[in-house]
Image (tube, rainbow, N blue to C red; front, side):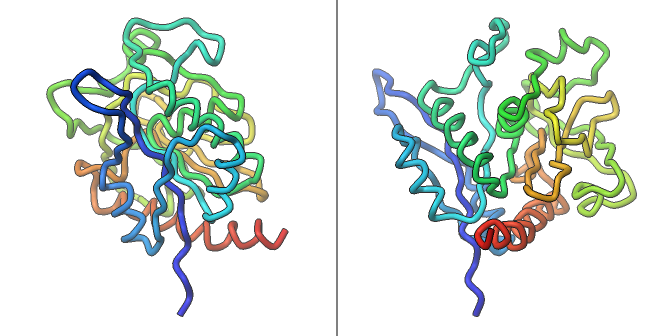
Length: 247
């Protein structure tokens, strides 16, 4: 029997507070979606040493970077916006280090929410810091009183997103205020909301399998069809991961 691929998962992190210790945590949708897609998830702690991060990556065949709060704009040479609520320093430092190693290895990677934004930034793109101000004509992309807020999705032909959703009306969840501005070199936009805000990117070259979604296919507010993104990713890991190992 063929063994299931091992897929790494980052996790969120909360620093010590007066009433509780520091801890890592992860919404169950991420690992359940990978399990349903035929993979075995391996949750990574936010290690500090680069050698330890390399050792973790040696164990897996692909990597999923999960959603969370905002990237710190100062780390990319931009000023803060009052709306920005950053990831914990330890998580962001680890995620950035890990993304650098993943891209150096050309390991299959799937970024979700801030995970996609990090993938784009690490590869040379940049971000809008607050969609309502940067794109005043944009649709609402976050509803503070409706965690299941949704909008339509416009899918580009001949893409992984196209294979997942095909023809017909598509709606996805939306819970963000930052978004991709300039797309990183080598990537193309494969889905947008009707207002043009980037909702999915995919790497165009043959030497790497990398994609990201701004929406959350693992969430309780996702549709059954969204699960197919994880299936496509796991299938891609089976092909690209083996090619990478052979090379």
